[in-house]
Image (cartoon, rainbow, N blue to C red; front, side, top):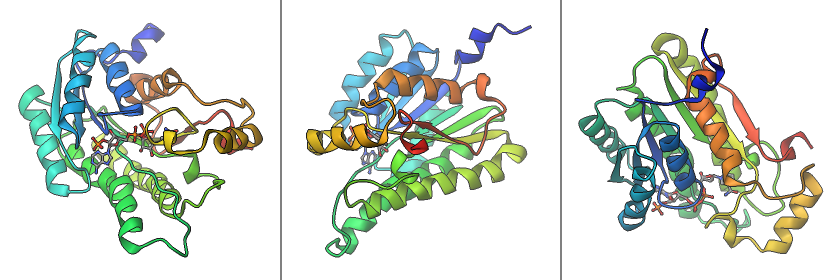
Length: 255
Ligand code: NAP
């Protein structure tokens, strides 16, 4: 009989984390390393990725950086190829790269809207395609969506909300296409609000009022509360979960 704690271990697995140069992605890379996985770190800022490599190696695991703009399908293919060349396989993809905006809809320029969709939705698709082509049965893709893919915001967020709701739809469909046939589970996490470079752009008083009005827990989330969800969905403990969106949002989306 399996010890339940073994269901959370990722020894011998290889994980790719996009958007690993700052914020939540740094924590995910470190947590996956702590759980036993070797980690491939992807983002555009190579210097910042190098700092995170030291963190992952500090967990005793191997780490590789691949400078990647996920909005370019060819760079996503190159990312998957580099991961396989270095570690021989990809078992886990955390589609975490993302950008935020808050532009009133009547003023939003096409290139602003397109950029958000291009990174948050299209980029996740290109990375998922590239990795799924080499993933073996038992692999796991985790799309970092947002509570704003589930509920309305207090700020104008047409592009961001559309990208994240789209990512939840993409998750459902890829799970349908790949889970039975290829043994690749595809799930999403919908975080509430966590401290990062992205949320540092929000005026703190507005943010805390919104959280106070919508979240039963009435506080920001903490990195380890998301790390636990990522490690769970990545590993064998979640082997019967696919196509799901797990809200880690202090209860906001249940409001
Ligand atoms: P962050 O600190 O701004 O990090 C965003 C990451 O995405 C950075 O590593 C950035 O790296 C990367 N990135 C942006 N554009 C990219 C591109 N074209 N190609 C590759 N990487 C790109 O923000 P965060 O809060 O940690 O956000 C991480 C994810 O969580 C995002 O998808 C975000 O929507 C989601 N999320 C965050 C919260 C929150 O409260 N923080 C809540 C819900 C959802 P480079 O600039 O180096 O490329």
